[in-house]
Every structure is written in structure tokens, then in C-alpha cells.
Length: 267
Image (cartoon, rainbow, N blue to C red; front, side, top):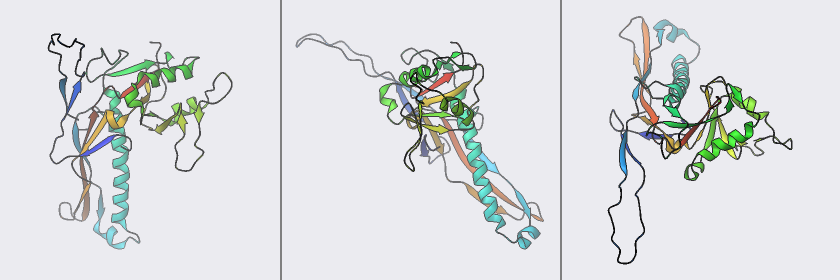
């Protein structure tokens, strides 16, 4: 959520038109004929959505006798659970009554110019389930596979186990490719780009897509109808008081050129 494009919608659904291919141009002499050029093709992106809910209950006697703010504590627990559930969906969600995670889209090694709309490009690590001996070189290939307009504001996304492997990598002269932050509030960098730790990313394994690099502000859109609403219901199931929390949220890849993946495979 912190790196994606979050939009507030006024209706139940959210739709976005994106173009594939730009306007084609050509050269001509001063009086030469000008033939018709191709026009961009519009594609509609509809991020799958669903309702994220929680419905915990507490007895009225517990609420009366507790020596702390039970309702406030439940609200905090719900918020933390919603944040964790969102994180799982934005990475691995199947799109059925929930957001579609960017790792569930079709992944291919084809370049932007030939890849089908909506599929993501991956760069192979060179070895199944591990980095090749030239691991840093493969990370550079991953960075350079992203077109220059998207590299401004791009970042790496991986879990802590994958990050632990990368932090041990060194260049030929013994320098670590990982650069820790030297100032408060500034992120550590890998090849000059910040790293976001997402524990929902898979560990390194044969064929896994364990590293993502891209401009998620351009590549992934999160649509939400409103903030979390909480309904206090003391009537439906006496003597219990239910705290029904619900949030309508969706998510999906908006620009498949803006996100690249590393696949731990030979090719």
C-alpha cells in the first residue's frame, strides 16, 4: 500500500483505461504525402475487488467488567489484521472476491514490445532455486529490464529471507552491493534503489518469483470505496456484542511494463 497508487472510488467498481503502444510518427519532405499513422489501442483495467471483514464478539459482562478499553483494543487488532490481509492479497491474491496480486499474473521472459498486454516480464536468475555465481549481474539485468521512465521512483520488493541472501553479496573487489542507510529516515539501498520488505513474497525456491522491481506507483493500483467502518451490534446474538468491521477494496496491475520479476530458474 505504501508504494502503490491508492485511489478512492465513489462507486462499487473502479475502471481505468490504459493505452498499449504510442502514436506512430514518420518523416516526410516539405511537399511529400502523409499517410495515416497508427493510433494507440485502449485497454480497460478493472481491478478485482471484494469486502474485507471481521466480526469479533465479546460478552456484555466482559465489556462492563474489563479494566481496559476493550472496544479500542479490538479496533486496533482489526486494523492490524486488515493490514496483514491486504498485504497478502496485493501480492498473492487470486482476484476472486479479493484484489489480484501482482505475482498471480502471467509471467514471461518476453520484452515489452512483444509481450501480451497484462503479463509481466521476468528475468531468470540463471540457476534453479538460487542465484548464479554472477548474482549481482543478474540484479543489474533486472534493473535495466525496466524502461528508464519507470526507474525514477522504482524499488525492490522481497521478503527478509531473500534480503538476507542479497545482503551477503559482494562485488569483485569485496564491497557489499547492499548499502545501509547513513541517515535517519532514509532507506537502505540496493544498486541505488530502496528495498521494501514484504513477508508475503515467496522464499527463494525452484521457479519462484521471489524478487520484484518496479515503479509500483505506476504499475499497481489499489481502489477503496471508503475507510473501514465498524458497526457495534448488541442485538443480534445476545448476550454477546459483535463488532462488525468491513472495508471494500480492490487491486490489480495497471501497467505491466512498470513491474519486473526475478524468477529463480535457469531460463
